[in-house]
Image (cartoon, rainbow, N blue to C red; front, side, top):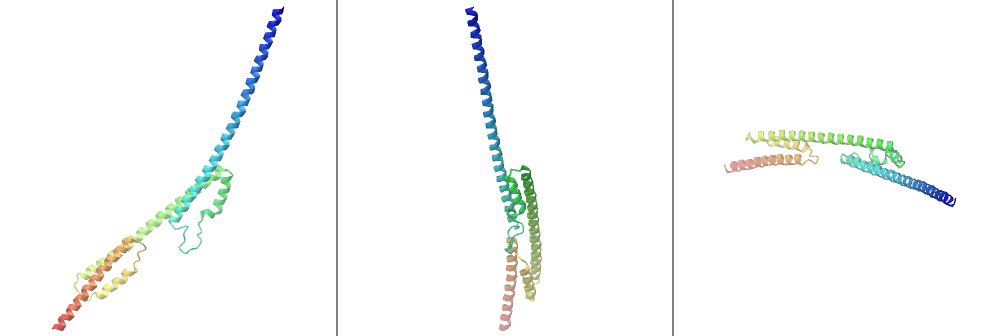
Length: 217
């Protein structure tokens, strides 16, 4: 009888220990689960915060890049000194988009980036168009200079002393051609001007020699 009660007592004790261990294990698992959930929440919040900062940095970088490209083609620097009509930093769309970004609205952020990309495409097209227009203008002026030079060369080959007036008219045409900060046009103008001056100097020398011969005669 004593052994039976002792065995039953041991069984109950082991049962209680097992139940206590199970409860402790369940409590430990729940504690770990809560800890993991809290860590996951912190990581999500940190990732969301970093994503928001990254989006803000990307937006600022794109805006500065857009404004710099606009300045390169003169859209933000008016010659007259007036305040330009295109100013991204002060536009209502940019202000509204900035407010939306602070609220971490990814859709508005994507829309803003698309607008900036579209704007940069326009700026790139304008810059390319202006460059092509300047190139065409330079080529047109060079063609005029070549025509003037050919005219001077043809006058020089005639060996006629009555070419001073045509040379002066050519110099008047030469003055009408603007350099527009083009070194190529400026160099060609100086070259043709030197040719014309040499021709006039040669004519003056011939006239002096002729007058001297007449006086001696």
